Image 1 (cartoon, helix red, strand yellow):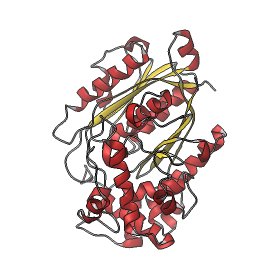
Image 2: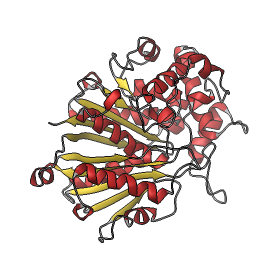
Image 3: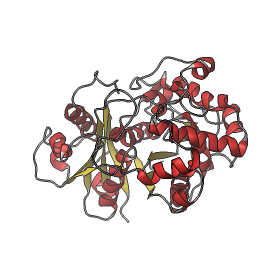
Length: 394
């Protein structure tokens, strides 16, 4: 297989809904940054991939056309919250298969205020399988947003198994803000105390408002090239995608009685296992992790699904500081979705942006020491999970 290198990355500061530029302008800026970072012109790009959730068909073309019209294939990708990494997955496949030597991948989102909801209410919902299983397990609360019920239910599921206190989830939000304070591109950078997290508005189960990511607008992009292309054009592409896996739901999601499975724990565990097998490395080899912390409950269960700590060991992992600087792994050095923000289509590319800079040693005040391997986890209910392993190949 052809080796896939990350030649360039770009990202704009994330913003609250109503405070951003239009989606196509944000996408253009991120793509131009990525091309400049790679040292390439748009005429080098052979294929384009655009990830977004809340935009009309061919929004990708509208974004790419702001840079140029060169007749290349442009693919539009929508996989809920894992959209950005799904687009990255397709771009990486194009490189590794030999179909292209240089591709440009962008993710963007212009969101509305408030909780996520369905756009089309005149037809069957795409999440009916997951909602039906949720209702079977824990019922339905009309006063609580769907995703808060699901990820709050996953937290209750974990607590029933391992008996941890609500405050353990809150400690993740405190850590997220502490990391985000070092990230000029993050939206929520002010420190927050555990008391503030725990006293914020209750959502569902152990979740409070400050344990949930905010709706966000933004864009991020990456230029992927083959190693031979990088050598031919003298690119300083030192970051390699060494393994990547994408999984969807398994039968147990809908036949079992686990809210952790409903929100993607099994998909994550399977994808991580596949990546470790492909790369011949394990969790102990990883220094930095960007994982999908849409809610603090999901970050906690993802620690175990990715093998960062033993099953039932997340509380000790958090309390001992093994999830931050000076610990076993620095999880979400960017501040994660909880603090950086979560513009759905952009999130997977924003994670790629962060880990590329970590591996290059150019992450500034948030730099993790001696990063050799970095892991990315991007999850979407409905469902899809993408796990990607990067390596410093310099």
